Image (tube, rainbow, N blue to C red; front, side, top):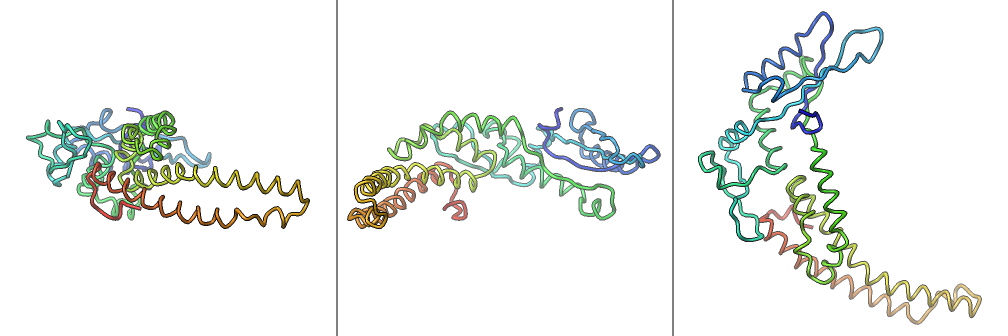
Length: 271
């Protein structure tokens, strides 16, 4: 198991004369049903100082699927339903006996399960206070992040055009992947920024024309104030006011559609 694809990391220490801290943590992991070498692997780092033999030990943990299912059932996780013939995300309370009715857990759901699972079974606060472990935290999936970046590089241009024309739905793959990995809140924020970037095209074009007009006027009159004091400035200001209103209304419609598609009714996920 590569450490980059593990779910969770626990940092502890050991020395040539004492491995008690590491053994205490590994024994607790084994009690959870995790198998050493497959479900968790230890990586021993060299000592940071030549005057000591104390080494940091990284315990990378990958929760097996049967334990993920068991604890998702226990905690009543709201998971995505499979066999959905629409583009809308539908959720239901996960039950192990109906596992085939649900899709594989996405990154957001896995993180929720792992946090609940480990915090419920291991007293991390006590281990930190007593000095048994130095730190513990979930890990990012580098392969998943690379896939999101590749999808965004492929579809970003089409997404920007789609936010202008209204045909953005079929290019939503990178935002759906982002939602599954980072959650709706951050995917919504990114969708808003893409929409904003796309709509800046209109004032950028008009503003460029106005800038060229100012340059021409400066060449003709050789006076900066005369060049800037154009009769088109007021019209550009009016255009920007109307553009801002249209931009806001356009985003409100798209926001409602994305909320419906992702089945997220929490207003904290919206801009």
